[in-house]
Image 1 (cartoon, rainbow, N blue to C red):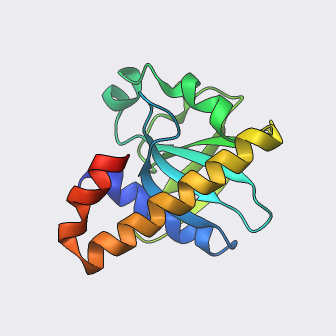
Image 2 (cartoon, rainbow, N blue to C red):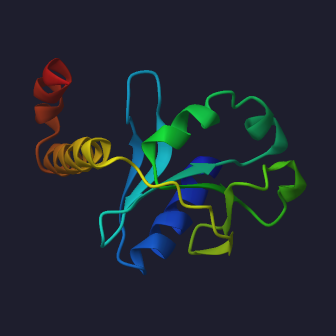
Length: 147
C-alpha cells in the first residue's frame, strides 16, 4: 500500500463510524480525482485529500477545484506532517492505517441541490461498479467503455 492509501484507509474507517459510505479515487468531474469522497447519512458530501509528505502537498495544484464538489473539504495527513502548511480555512484530519481523528472541522459550504443529486448518483454508480469488478474482474472492460 502507498502512503496516501494508508491514510485513506484510516480516514474511511473513521468516517464509516459516523455513518458515511466512502469511495477512494472518485472522479467528480473530468480532470479531477479526489482521494476519498464520503457520502453521509443525511446526504452530505465530504472530500478528503490525503497528503503523505510536504512535497506531495506542494505539488498539488488542483485541490481548490475540488471545493465546488463537496459540502466540506479536508486534508488528511499523518502525525509527522507539518500541518502549518495547510490552509486554515479547510478541515484537518490526522490519520494512520487504522483510524483517524478530525482535528479541525471544515467550514460547511452546502452544494446546490441539483449538483448534490448528480454527485450522489455518480458515487453510487462508482461504488456499485467497484463492487461488481471485485466479483467479476472482466466486467471492467464493459465499464470503461460507458464511462
